[in-house]
Image (cartoon, rainbow, N blue to C red; front, side):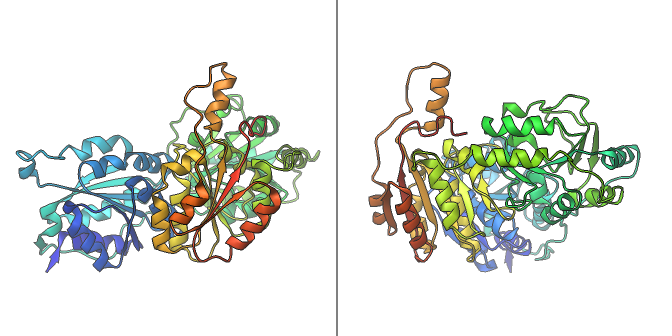
Length: 538
């Protein structure tokens, strides 16, 4: 006989899920058993927040929704940050929580609160599992998580629902997979076609929606055919190989980059917004062009951000919209005849070149980019280092730089790297993290040890919350609460079964990174940099 937990687990397996992450409690033991029997490997973590980021890393690797499991009360509450991240960063995450049965909750209140009420503001949907309707509930949960802009869906599972046998009719397959939308014919499409057809200086901006639609090939062919330069959000890096002359890199957080890119965009007579969601962008990207600018916004969902205006909006997936636009334009049509995009690309390279001092964060990032193979997947924690490495690190394909770009939360880089490498055993993975960010999730080094996967961690050690300290100085405030002591990270790495080493110059970094590529376990490269090393860097 099948239990409720079996149905939930088999439906997840039918959607391609092969891993689940979390920390067990008595209320989720049946769910854990069901997941294991269905073929989902349960990965024990040290904190639910890290488990959620590992689940996201796995999704980037194989395309299946992430699965996070938490027990009631403190387990559910611990996961709030990573669920909010999935909401803002467009990550399909199935968040399973255990709970006591409704009748029991009326008189047994230990660790009991309303999980659904807590989570509803930061999930696409929240369900309370019921026997007899588990198949339809799981179909709904999965399609909602994946449809349009992906996001988290919460499922509260009472103990009796998970443990009880049921005669419910159900299917182990996932039948409701969402499909891509095509542009609707009409005056908006006609306007967009005419605008693109006549443009002499077209430019494209692409972001997270284009990545989630797997539109890289369509965007690459479109840009190369019509010689259209491409700017991406940080999440969109690699939609066009960033070694391509048309690629202008990621944008959104660096004033130095914005100072070069925004004037170029405002010279354009056709701005193509391709799956671009400005939730990743900072204040410089609010109203970056005039209200009457020639903007074609290709979007899978209704845009309510209010960050900028568009002359015409096409509710469509990116690839079919580009196919229609391509048919309206001759490939020989002029595009930026004066070569402004090429000049901007050269200026960006100069702006983010290795520092003249011979050592610092920028030099470290350039050295590691040169050493690491082209297919390396990099992750970046929030902080000053993330802004700089996102400008320097060139990606040859999408999902080669993973980070929290909308919520911008710390503590994400190491578990993102772990989750990706666990699922994809082929691509090298490196995590860039500040010293404070690494200390947020040091316990997960034991998870990394137990998984026996060769993740490389580059920690920038400057004993300061560098980005916040910089903002503090820029606003002429006193130095308060941003500096701290130095941790012996190499010793910590060795204590957790990894290889750790201090790095103080480019030569040492090159040598240690090359050796790390051939190591079976994890490597921690502790790069000492001076405080205030990021001044003027981005």
